[in-house]
Length: 117
Image (cartoon, rainbow, N blue to C red; front, top):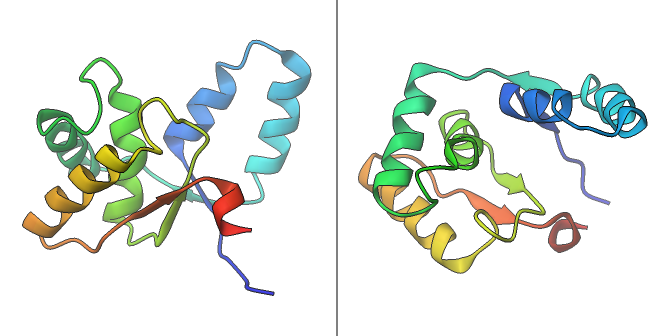
């Protein structure tokens, strides 16, 4: 069985805080505190803006670009998401890694949790 180090970003914590269902919000928060925290940096904000400029995600969804940028800047191997609308798409994967290559970052593997299990 493979072992993974699990991280969560400040963006994810903010999304959890915005969860309307109080029981779900509490449960997600309890799980999230066991993961290592990745902060939002100026470098990740700039990279997220470039992702949006290149069309990886719509500009009115900056948090989606920020998820990928934070993972990239921190050298994370896999970004897991259930967001099929903006993140887990072939087009998004290609644009993210094109931008990453142009800026000397490693490729980011974007997948659903089921693809990793």
